[in-house]
Length: 134
View (cartoon, rainbow, N blue to C red):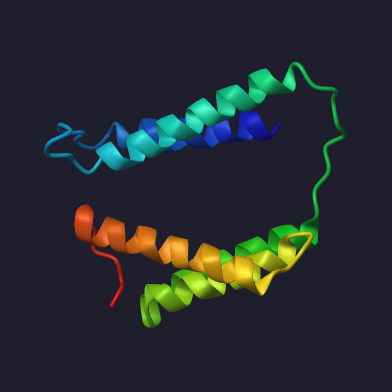
């Protein structure tokens, strides 16, 4: 189910990105980035589905509390990034989402936050994306 869900999301965003100009690798259009990301997600989904054929089936289960935590953290990230800045939003996202994990480690959360902030700055300065980073 995980692989099929990833494939569905990849197709949704990948096919939608085709409505925008793709451009060339030297001068990417607005559809290039979503197409590349959705293509990678599609490959991960296909590999997941193929891999699942060789493993023993596991009953499908989900945790409503964890789903609520992740949705809350994503909403908080969007609001904090819009009204304060993205660094605070990333810290909120990582530290809040970590409550859905089986273990909670502050050091791990700090490392993940720093990596995501570095990726945000790379997107801002290397890809010239307009991100709410100071």
